[in-house]
Image (cartoon, rainbow, N blue to C red; front, side, top):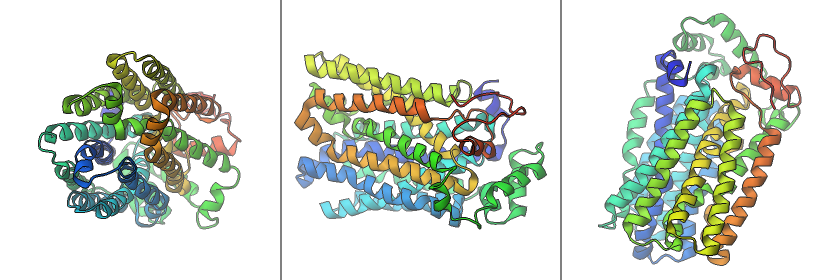
Length: 465
């Protein structure tokens, strides 16, 4: 049965959780791209230098790092649901504050605060979805977050294009408050996850959620397994456990994967697409804001492809295939800048880069963030992974324009191409195949030193590599 068929067989609660968390992805995506359009106009209003443009872009990422660092602990303390409600409400508030900024310092502060809420959301959302999804469709539902993120990116570019004639960058930023309000209304009606209730010793509520997720399942057995998995939290410090065997290997994997996802350059494309197209010779608002939206439409098609294949093909083939496309895209972009190969080939190169990323890295980041660790470590594990991701993002956002000015297009995409090759080697060596595995089962991979133990009752009969 395909993903759509399996989805129809899932519970209403699981689908509502996935849809609500995915809507948070729209917010995240919109914020990534609307700054690209807004920069074209606020640069003139505030007289921003190249370095100041990088600072405005990077400010939100700095906030994201802080939010991601604390997001895991917050989700464990107040719950996945409460953390998500707080994220949506404050995101709307800080979006409006950004739109009302009257000086560069005020803009930078509001962008940092906005990033803080986003940092929490990208940690909590995949955990919320993973803990509310059956194994057979968990990968697809986690990829749904990336689908929503790309939809948000497209919306950000299109809104910027629509408002370009008036130069209304304040509306570009402030409109993000609308989906934030909708997300708040969606999430407030949902329960928290059974695994969080079990983590806090609230067994009756955990049982009730399990029964709603799958009325036909053996609730007693599922609850006993979850309780056994979460029961060691009081005996050992979580951070200490993540830095010791057997989970040290998992920690190193998620840190490495998170770093490679962003250091390979995707957000240079998202944040600075208008500048890249300008360097290729494009001019006019239609080209500088419309073409980036078309690039992301291709990325949306790719991420939908990932959504319907990740639970069928597996995590590793999807991830490695996406990185391979990114490598080819870098080769094409190097050739375009080296030979002046034309604007059409440059556009194709950026499309391939984005398609490769959204099919592989962009989709699988949420899958591994939600799956890699057992329940007692899951939110902090996701926090660790996404903090590494955001640190790399901050590096790229802070230096890309300087890199493009100093090395030109050739040197810049040589750097990204080498990093993509290193990422492929890392993934091939260390990424586990978790397709079809129950969340409580995945810990066995790390406890067996990076190998799946023999499991006669596992229907997929898969190995890690």
